[in-house]
Image 1: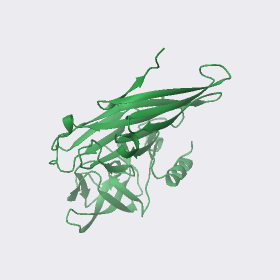
Image 2: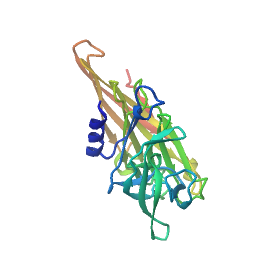
Image 3: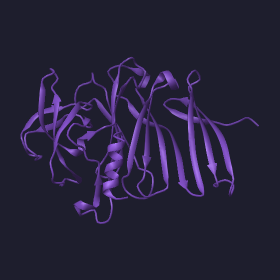
Image 4: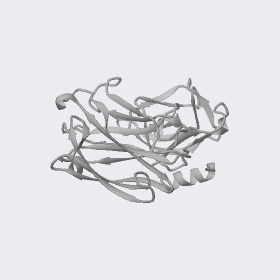
Length: 283
């Protein structure tokens, strides 16, 4: 897929983060990355991110921004550069300090994401903040922050290996509330650039005994794999039984189980201790 088309897709669907290498990874031009334009509304994807005065990792720090902080892009620096293992642009952004006063400075592109969610993920009555990014080593990283905990002890994360054989790809994410599913879930979708496979990962965040003042863990509650490789296709349509805390997946399987035939399979999964376990039909 041509870089121009990739950029078009990203602008048309802002909730997509893309980072992939093709060819020689030592060449800056071999990386396709998500880029942002002036006016884009994004979020800080790491905790205590340094807002700097100059586009340099050693430049003076204006202030530090917490994970999930909203920012507005003011300018994207033209040059694409390598910082440690990441290839990206520097961005001038505007944010607000903790006291509400505006502040501006520069951040490297790896700390920006359009994927940010806020909700009571663990059912303790307090809202957590979650972000999703693609890392320099081509992992989908989900971070969850407990806002009331002290810095350096308030963020946990989970890495997902993207679907397909190549590095990177596009990533979508969404939030499912406890009112809909009986439990709060993050849903992360991985779509490779050149592969026919993909997946939807349903993630949970659990704190032992729902104790306030503790940092929990992100878990893979369920991963549904999909495939579009004509004439073979595997797709899942998901619904929830909120009262019983169940997830129902209706799988449309074309050509994989029976050549030339479409088979529909209904799978029911029961929620227990942060994961979904498939219920088997009684004989």
